[in-house]
Image (cartoon, rainbow, N blue to C red; front, side, top):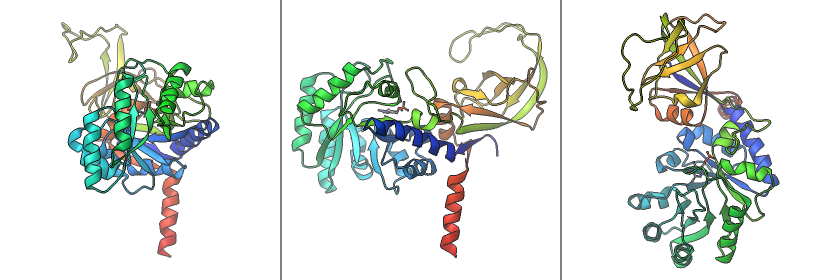
Length: 364
Ligand SMILES: *Cc1c(COP(=O)(O)O)cnc(C)c1O
């Protein structure tokens, strides 16, 4: 069935190994972030098989997909007060920045006879989540320390997600300083894949002992210079889509051009008659801006919610209706593919063979 996404578990495993080696050299532990792949258990399992001991996601539904994996489970988006009970039930750790939410978590934890670990987020200038004023942070720390249902696990920060402010040594030292001052330093979580660059330059001070990594672990990519790291693969996720129309057409539309769905009037260049193909795939299934054709000479020229239009004029291969075209996927494209119920997921490579062998052993 098409479209389908091919997931190469071997390549993911290798990426995890590379990232794990790199972070271990800097005494940093990884929380593997699973939201890009909707918390699919097979992939989460691959991370755990490579020695990742903590997994995090922004949604409880995703975390529940790998409920049975032996690892610490983090909710890396602040909990909604309305889901406080589920947070305590299904997550070992959550990141927090609101007093009222902490109170709700504490109450549920007491009812469930559990201790829920909290990481308090500090906003160091990216202006997404986190305490901005130290007095408010101090108040939350004091509360978490004495609350019977809570366990103050540490501090964390998130950068390069909203304002794209980059992490630097000064910001890391600020986080570390606060963690030490308030004795909240079991786990100091210094950021996401955008902090890899600083780590490689030895810019992360000793004491920061955790990073929450999604993109770098899955695609081998750091986010400051957007470089692929040596030894990693950027093609662990491949989308395969079927051609449903293949025709020569002019590159210049005929008629008066109006605004598109985003309110912009598109501009076209006249390249003469071109050979185009339409794939049965669209914005509902994939993010067109973060996907790239595998075959040379194939060019994406546009997409609507369920049609992807490509130019195949300069391609060596003769594509016809019924043929398939493959695309390498980036972060948002994978995320959307895993969210779309129309995309079939196909797991490939050794991890699967290993499982098969193991089950064979069990039978005999
Ligand atoms: C998504 C997310 C991450 C992971 O980011 P990557 O850039 O994929 O490594 C880490 N922390 C938080 C709070 C997030 O929301």
